[in-house]
Each structure stands twice: as structure tokens, then as C-alpha cells.
Length: 231
Image (cartoon, rainbow, N blue to C red; front, side):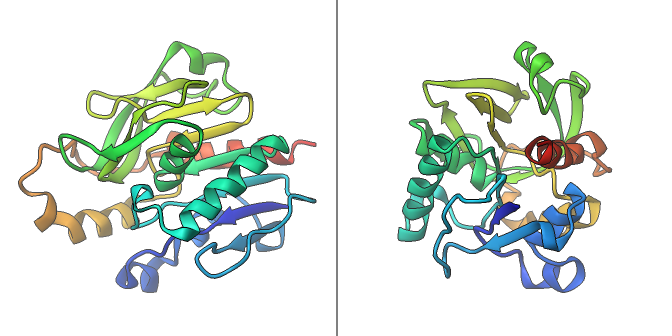
């Protein structure tokens, strides 16, 4: 079974139309609800690792640097998951939480938010990566974030970046990944986020281009699910 670690909730207007973080993740990963346990560490105890084949950490409207109790407890749990060799994929907030947990530095991006459909460039190391190896060297992805991984953990391998974001994907060991972009978003969802944040981002230098579908980025979730369930 896979665990979706639900670290937050989308905007109410978006949820009414399209569902919440866990719904997008399930759909894009091609998973059925009976294959997944959704755990909200803000409200629930974190489970033991028996029968957990993989963990997907969702985004959040909170910041990892807030270090709320539930964030710290999740961080400790993820360290134990790594010791138990459980595959992990962190998305946006989850990506940043993994970086912070394993010794990296996370803070506000000095140039402000990145939001919209952006280009992501793979590094040479991604060519042999279990998740990224068959993706094109440059692909489109949806992004919406204010904080970034400013310094990778010492044992992390940089897999992807772009002209704005120095770390769009990394891997630790052979089975822990973080992605700053949102593989679970489609055009409807990112449009909701762009619209909601227009007033906040008007004074920032941002990476924003015409919004379009991002099939290669979306495929990362299914690739991770297949990796976890391969056995």
C-alpha cells in the first residue's frame, strides 16, 4: 500500500470544482483508493511502516520553515521511513520538507514566487534515474511556490533545474525524490492558483508563460507509483 501524506488543503473554490491534493495525486498516479492510505499528520497519528510500499508527500499552503509540531513529527517519521528503505516522493512542500529533513536549507526564493507553466531542464544524472530516465531533457511543468531548496542535503543528487529555480528535482540514495514542480496539477488547477495569486505576485520577477498541459511532468507520479509497486 502507498501512503499519501496530506500536508495541507487547497483553496475552497478549487476543492469544490476539482477535489483536493490527495484526489489529484490519486488520479494522476493512476491509483485506486483501495491502494492508498491518506494520512493527515495535522490530525492523525503517523503509521508504522509495515506494509507501506511508498510515500507521496503533498504540497501545502504552510511553509516548512514554520516548523509546526506536525511538520517536525513528519520530518522524524520520514527519517525513519528512509531507514526502513521506504521509497518517498515529495512534491513542492514535500520536496522542501525532505531537503530540510536531510540537512538542506529551505527559505524564501530571493526573487519571489515561481508560478505558472515553466520549463524544467534535466541534468546528466537524470539520464540513469529510475523515475526521470525516459523523460525529455526539457519538459513543461506546473509550478506555484514561494520557498525553495536553497542548499541541497549533502548526500543529495541534483536532477533538474531551470533558469529561475536551481533545484526542481533531487534524489537521495536510490529511492527518495523531491520535485519542486507539481506533477499532480492540470491546467484547470494551475489556472486557479494563478488567478488567486495575481495580486500577490504582480511586483515579483516570476517565470510565467502560457498555461498548457504537462504530460511529461504528470508522468512522474505514475512512474513513482510503478516503482513502488513493482515488487
